[in-house]
Image (tube, rainbow, N blue to C red; front, side):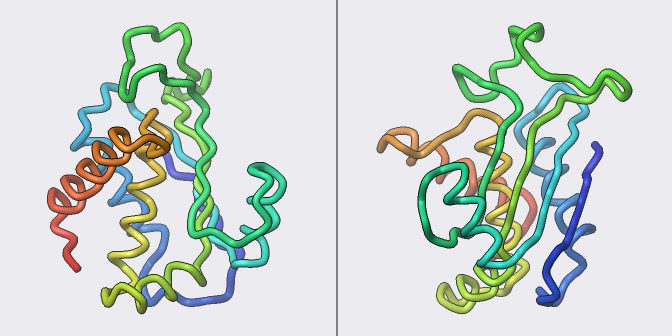
Length: 162
């Protein structure tokens, strides 16, 4: 797996953001039995920048915790049967999953709000976004339940607890 990692924020999460992200993404992909090596871009930023991106791409004028920009349009989550419709890096052959943007301010505030460590919140947001990159969504109640269960399963698999 290739992770392109960029941290634009001076805020500290109290952990190695790149190392943690790599382990969480790779663990999630392993748990989900993704049959390809993958490439992911991760940008860590602040509330102001993620608010700007949220407004530009989703027309929602507020800061959010995580944004996901998938490179593939899965009709069904994890459906890799139509390889010709998937985006691969021509140089590495890796499946281009897409981009993840996380607000470090939201990681810290939500960790405090939910009473767990910043590492757990950071990992949760990464897993949530990876699931979006693989075709999962939570707009409908049934989809939400499936996605929430997958998030819990992956956190348990990685032994990341509250």
